[in-house]
Length: 344
Image 1 (cartoon, one colour):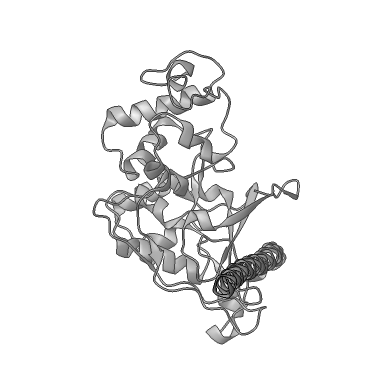
Image 2 (image 1 turned 180 degrees about the horizontal axis):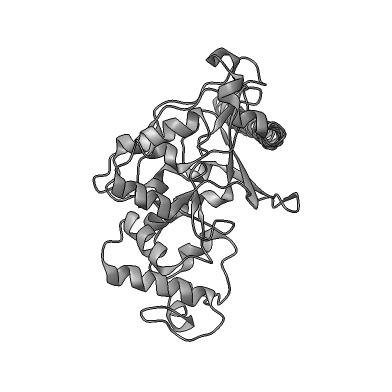
């Protein structure tokens, strides 16, 4: 009888210890999860305020550039040596590094990309060719599908798509029949895949820009880009915007990928153009005539210009050291005529 009682007591103690262990493990896990959630919230708030500071830094840098632009134009006369640089952040595609918030800050004109709602068929063809769509019939189908998406009627363009096509998809949705308001809408259009939209061109700067010790001084420019064109291509996102230019791109604000519109341009020539505008804003296309041959320079003038009176300014922010993916950049668009932040 005593032996049975001792066995029962040991069994009860065992179950009690097991129950307490489970409760302690659950409490420890819950505490750890709450601590991690609190840490995540702190990081989110820190990132928000860092990004807000970086946006403010970029827009402040642009207003400083505007106020000093006459001096900026004459900087070759004002600066007898590189040590006396003015240190202005001017609009260009290549980002600056804001050391105080550890972020890359890009200030560029929205006219560095084409307005997707006002694009002519010939330019669409050139862009789609750069993006790897080699067959003319496929390019025509994509262009007409975009036209069907944007127009206000239900009439089909040749090889285009209206509701009868989109209603057979899973999930189904309607053809918008209105202008594109957000560029990502293109991913809903017949024939436009994620690869066509984003591209598969592994195009990264060789090195990060280095911030100057004094925040009022300009960061050093990034190193030239490198890429492998074998079976790789840029995406529509490198050429298009809803706030973009109607006819020609700003040469300083255009993505390096957009320079592929110049037929037979080499990686070395693109790197030379990027290096030129990283050191000094390009003020006239003739400055690039020594980099390109005659036929290439004709194409440069067909697709590019120097914008002097832009409508929209883009300030984009990404964490320093992050990959140079378009998905990792946040941007705000400022209407320079209305001084309004589009908060995009």
